[in-house]
Image (cartoon, rainbow, N blue to C red; front, side, top):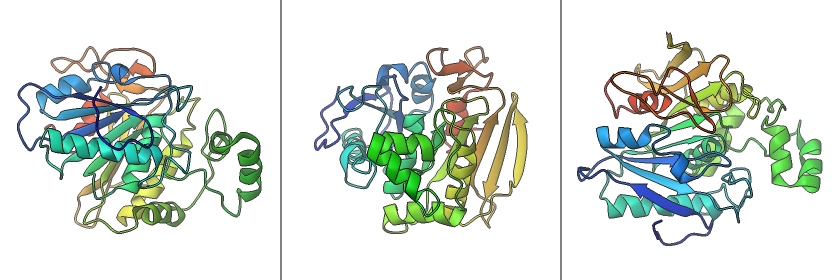
Length: 312
């Protein structure tokens, strides 16, 4: 565990740095899901092997049971999902420490996460878009999905009063069988721009992964996430390219210059998990475990390819 300075969210920090990592290497931040720990998210996801291959420095934050009994990152708490506040501030401090300590490239910082880690990845991309070149949300939710609107206000206030932020998030964000609140792209995008405070030179590119048999995070969240980040990038939600890879459907959304800005991956019949491919030759990826399933496709390698960290 690494000491990294100011830590208002009381998180823990772990780092894997390959022996041959050069100065100016990329930094990849990987956020585990609920009930997981940092140690469940390095070898198992294929990220450690990819760190050796690229190479890059792998930052593995860890939630504490004292913060959340299920070890979920608290993406739904306003005191943890705003710039400079709580867990968001702790994660930003970790990134600053790792960038300084390992002399990584500040222009090549990326974040990905599963489930609550995916939702917290969306938080970081909204809170600090100038920090990240790219991100990935795997079975997660859009940023600020549990804020009240004219349509959800009454229910939101009631659930928030009875069960707190977690109850309102379960209802509004489409968790545990609920359907997420349907918002338009302009509303979703405005939430990100308000959090960011200022427009960065370039918004981070975003990869979105979702199993269609997910019973924990409603699959509709992927569509809401697409609307959010397409609006942020000023592009539409009509795919410019569609392909099927290993049974997964990939759609790519480009800007006016033809540059990919958002991609979605839809895995039919896939549960609430991160997709790995332990039998791939010669690029085996990860190991099957809790919330880590063999899908015949390596999500982490594909995400790094979208970020242009590995060759196509």
